[in-house]
Amino acid sequence: MVQIVIIGGSFAGIAAALKAKELYPKAEVSVIERQEKLAYMPNSFSWSLKHQMASDNQEFFNKKVVENSGIKLYLGQEVIDIDASRQRLLLDNGYCLVYDRLILAMGSRQMSDYIKGSHLPGVLSCKTYQESQEAKTLLAKAERIAVIGAGQIGIETSETCLKLGKKVYLFEAQESLDFNFFDADFLSPMLNDMKKAGLNLFCQERVHTIEQVDSGLRLVTDCQSVTVDLILLCAGFRPNSALVKQLPILSPDQTIEVDTYLRTAIPEIFAVGDLIRVPLLSENNLVYRPLINTALKTGSLAAYNLWESTYSLPLSTQLVAHKQYSWYRTALGLTAEEAIFEQDIACIDYQASFSSHVTDQIFIRLVVAKETGRLLGAQALSKQNCLTLFQPLVLAMAEQKTDEDLVFQDFLFSLGQTELFYHLHQIMLKSLVERRS
Ligand SMILES: Cc1cc2nc3c(=O)[nH]c(=O)nc-3n(C[C@H](O)[C@H](O)[C@H](O)COP(=O)(O)OP(=O)(O)OC[C@H]3O[C@@H](n4cnc5c(N)ncnc54)[C@H](O)[C@@H]3O)c2cc1C
Image (cartoon, rainbow, N blue to C red; front, side):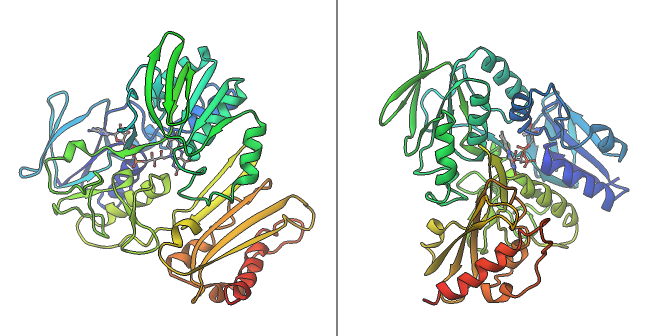
């Protein structure tokens, strides 16, 4: 029987397994996962604390459904060696598995190479279930919390800790919040509300040392030192690729090198999810952005390509959306700060009432190529729910469409119910004028 083996039973690994079992029903599909949980949703940590929920569903995939589809699960077991020449895996319990096709889905972990002391007790991340449980226990006793990294996860974690009545310090090495997705100035209304909520926010302050002192953990930046009871590490995603360091498939940044069919340099081995980089808006712009949508889609795409190169990975637009500190925000593509390095751009800013019935404002920024109007990036922020605003731009952006291509397309408009997409029409009109002026 043909053997398809997947290392890692999280978003990417299980998406790959389910699709592989469906496409090749006669094959034996096995998933090895070192945790006991399948695809633990790391946001469960914040959700459960914020909403005082006990432990609702925390797994994205249901174990029973996966098993009933005929997939063999090896939970609580770790692959410790890959013998690529004999197509064999060695597990930590001494068990050996052979494979005809192997999908690497070992994902990522959060760690810091540059912070001295980041391995001290009391410095935690919350990516796995065990880490989250430990963080919850320590959080209950802690009064002063430092969160390192003001990306989506750090912002969410800081909000959760404030809601629990803690004194919270949020440190970000870069100039601004969530800088991979939003320009520095764009999030200033949200930033004001974060400070009003009592957050001690320090941007452009890289934490370089953590020390154990009598009164807790002292965290040292270039500008100051702060002593806290608990540190939550919310930055520094690194691919979990140590297992394959002896194979000729690693990039210098430790991601796994794949082609557009997600094949590695070894024909039987594929890699997916948080192990790989994706092409952001251009084949040459490979970026490492650990996201669930990337994990899910690359998992199922690899399954299609196991024997024949069926589907290639389209250009990514890295669409994201969040609600934090009462603000909804969404973004895709490049920020203006990033895009300006590549070409002559126009940055179109737009502000309007959210709808004919709601006076709350919506702020939108569009980044386009000045000459052609090609869409390069977009950001939106509002107190009203605008999370889906940019989904219609994903294909347009990946296919390198322009403001002219989109401006007179139909858009959904239901007075008093859904007027959201009217704003896209408006900002495209504005772009036509402003980028030519
Ligand atoms: C707090 C938090 C919140 C997040 N929120 C979001 C969000 O809202 N939206 C979003 O898009 N992304 C979010 N992310 C990122 C998202 O979690 C990752 O992009 C996603 O989990 C990647 O899935 P994956 O399957 O590629 O890898 P992972 O989820 O990292 O899973 C890899 C799996 O492989 C297993 N494994 C590794 N090595 C071995 C081995 N040798 N043997 C056996 N098993 C092994 C691991 O135990 C793990 O379960 C969040 C992350 C964190 C930490």
